Length: 460
Image (cartoon, rainbow, N blue to C red):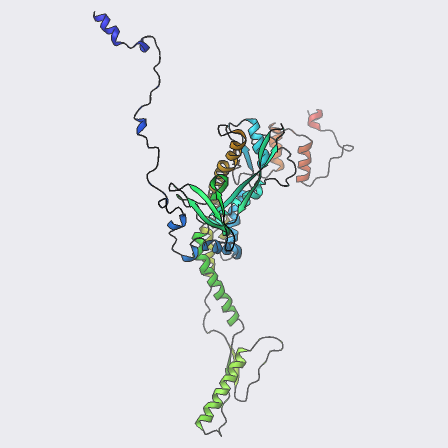
């Protein structure tokens, strides 16, 4: 009886070595599946501008678009800073990583974006007329740095692929300039709903999120306007602009001197006080007119009555040096984007090029982060949309990647020799042609070519 009781306590699946069906641990039903709070204002206020907490009136959207546009077009330091950020990202090689996507999908996406596939030889593409250009798109996408956001509208062209299957090909990602954006509708959870475009005097155009590609710099929550890279530099740009004007005025007024006219004495025969005052005022007025109209040059001159005088007076003492504050403001503008190395090694600057290398390394890391943000948005809203339209949402999609910024090495003859000796690279006609072009050597002449000692065995 005791044996029977023990047998009954043993579960049959365990007795016959069967595994029980996996069961969820914990209370899965208690996991929240919807949001109760919100990122933006409640549903009746779906426009993000309502929550904009910018304190400077000139930088409240949309007025800030004009300010940032003026900054990037009129100031040499601001332009240098933006180019220091944008050009390395545009210069590095962008590729398509197949990931787990089928070869057919990879080839189709690569043909649309005109990007080389990672680990494969470059493929010659047809003419680029009426086709999408990744290089042009990247240039415009990076305008999200000065403006905070850069918006594109997707359009496609229906045409057969190499197998005759009708596909939706990217025809254009039309840039929608920030100056033309009139409204941004945001869901309570912070998601983008739609963009409304339209300037004063034109009709409104509403574009839903399913046909948009939106690059946003440092987006927080539902702030699809982003934050300009130039926002921390605005104060220094304004002060520098004022200081430059003062410096120009200082040179203009003190470079030649300020004309000062001493009125001649009134004749001693004038005894009437009223007449005396009248003549004196007339001489002072005449002298002021001479001073205001005085100009330097070969034909310059002035005529003064007897006992009168005219002098060119400069400022007594030392003029204020405007170069120091201007240099300081330039340094702060560069520092706002971690581009401190732009201010090293020049005239009247402190630091060295060795210190600049350290700054440049840290700056390069920041560029990697910006490029990763661009790639992430492009993968979600260009590549995946393209795959979803043509192959379905369940098919894996490739990814846009880029070579590490600053990793490109100059090809030297020594490096080329090491690669050949290590049998990593095999010499061929293309490699020889490249080497001759790179080092300015004459073209290969088969009639006068000498045998290679290594391959012929003469040097053995």
